[in-house]
Image 1 (cartoon, rainbow, N blue to C red):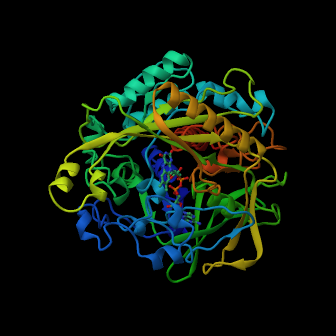
Image 2: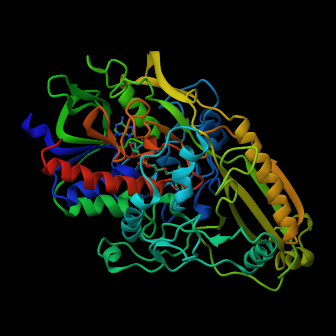
Length: 562
Ligand SMILES: Cc1cc2nc3c(=O)[nH]c(=O)nc-3n(C[C@H](O)[C@H](O)[C@H](O)COP(=O)(O)OP(=O)(O)OC[C@H]3O[C@@H](n4cnc5c(N)ncnc54)[C@H](O)[C@@H]3O)c2cc1C
């Protein structure tokens, strides 16, 4: 037992687990990180990081057979030959869809931090006030001011590029130099703001080192080269991942034990001690079961997997899942509505080009229902757009010869792409739960997902498409066409909830410190904890909540309260 006892256990080594590990280790706690996937060592295990396009047999596409075998993950834009090894394949990890739900996962050390698109925006005070003001879900137990210093704390370490734009709907942070809008994007922005003064577009904020600080280079991280090959793993450590940043920082303390191939089956609850004493682990290769023990447990297996583990943590005291007296564990799951997009063209600034690539787009923070309810739907959406020159493809219909060469040397007009990221409303009927009969090869019950769109999502989508068209018309674009992808929830990869935070143990699972109301030494700080979804990309909020929760947990541990 002594060999298997630590001060703290972290379940999962992705974005939030990496943060939990770093913070716990830096506070002097001997920390065991249990990760179900294989080890992925920064740089050493990025097999395609230097592969040229022509070295991929299908120039990056995956064979049809692979796509047919993997209909769910194939719908993710990044599931291609250069990064497919970081994605979970459909058949290896089944789940049950009561309604269509594309569950996109990355099971390895680093989790989805290797694959994410790195867009990071703080929530605003309006987002935390949303459920309380509008009467849905349950009131958040914290407000923006509680999290603001922790956003700053994590942004400094992560390295976030952006401008100080002074918008209360998208608070400023600790920024490295920003990427730039190109000429047409600036022009579109100016024309839209002239017509709609409350719609201020900003260049995206993203987790890329545009000017590394000393604390970044000390960890071996360097400047972003704008290769736009990030999903392969970055040899420069220029974008934030657990593998390049938090896990090396945790390892430097000497307090980290990383254990890959360790599927956490459940948490062990001790009825006498009235707390969790450890976790049951199944070796993913040998299927052998082991137990590990600690004073404090951080559950960071990603939103739906954290729900699964807690639902599977059955004891005499908690027959329906850990801390689940109110029966709400697994309920109030939500996501982001990505269905709407708009394409257009523009024929101004044809003498202008841009240099290199850029890992972000232009963002318009939500402008609907911000300060009061104005629309016939709740909440709103963030809008992203980008503009790039068409060209080099203009020669497609030319026969070989001088005309072909000529056409290939000319750039076309601009193409403009706009998309939405809509808030969805967590509802009791949107839930995940355990299948009563089926288990996976590790003996874990299959997760059933019963989450769908509702009328609010349809109205919000319609509004985005109308407003987007109106804005692009105002901006002088032509050939505007709208699209409803009708994609299933889940493909946004921003699933949240099921173990929500709140003030009252009767209506929530976690308190304002991400601590289980009914089991004080368990903390859940990934997307499962989210009371509502906001319209921002969520991961920076998970990071800030995690750092804040560890600080609290470490203080409580010192006081002997856990
Ligand atoms: C293509 C793509 C683009 C994205 N773009 C963005 C973006 O721009 N901005 C943004 O904010 N977010 C983005 N996301 C989402 C982002 O990746 C997630 O929000 C984030 O990774 C969640 O962090 P996490 O720690 O909860 O989960 P993960 O990073 O998924 O880590 C969870 C870890 O837990 C492990 N695990 C699971 N179950 C168990 C178990 N039973 N036992 C042990 N270990 C377990 C997993 O193997 C995994 O390593 C994107 C995701 C993808 C795939």
